[in-house]
Amino acid sequence: MLRAAFPVGDAFKNLQVGRLRAAAVLVALEPGKGVWLTRRSTRMAAHPGQVSFPGGKIEPHDASPEAAALREAREEVGLDPARVEILGRMDDYVTGTGFHIAPVVALVPANVPLLPATEEVEELFALPFSVLLNPEYPVSRKACGQVGLRQFWVWPHEDHVIWGATAEILHRLALRLRGVA
Image (cartoon, rainbow, N blue to C red; front, side, top):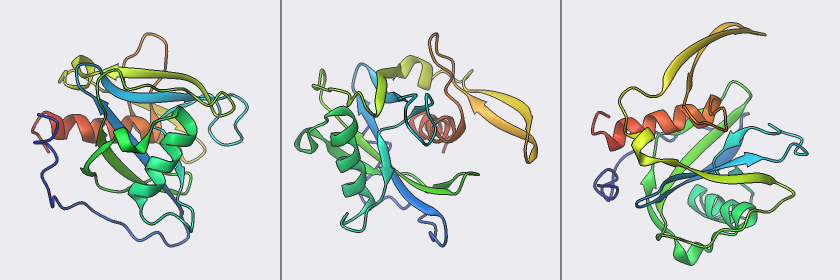
C-alpha cells in the first residue's frame, strides 16, 4: 500500500523558491508502526518544542531535496541513509513563516535503529497508521493571530500537539494513502 501511493515517476508540484528559505523534510514511513516525527528541542532558535519531521535547510552542497532530507535525518535522528528507500515527493509546501518545504517520502525497515541528537530533538515518536488513515482526522481548528483569523489542521496525539506545516503535510499524506488525492 505504501509503495503504491507513490508510483515511480509520479509528478509533484515543485514551487519556485524565490526569497523563501528552501527546506526538505523526510516523511519516514515504517510498516506496522507509522510515520516518524520529532519534537524539537526547546533550546532550538526556530520552532522550539514543536512537532516536526526530520529535516531542515537545503544547503548549497546538497545535490537535491532528497539528499538534504536524508542528511538532516541522519543528523537529527541518526537514520542511516543506506536503510532508506525513497518512495517519492509530495507537492512542495510554503509556510506563512517563509519556508519552502519539499516533503520527501521514504520507507524505512521495521525497527530501524534511530538515535535522536539531543541538541536538536527532545523526543522521537511515530504517529500510528491507524490515526493517519482514520477519516475522522485531522480536525480543523481556527485561531486569531498576527495575520487575523487562521484555519489549520490538528492531529490527535495524547502527548503532543501536531499542527502547522507538519499537520498539513500529514493531511496531504493521509489523503494520498487513503486514495483520496
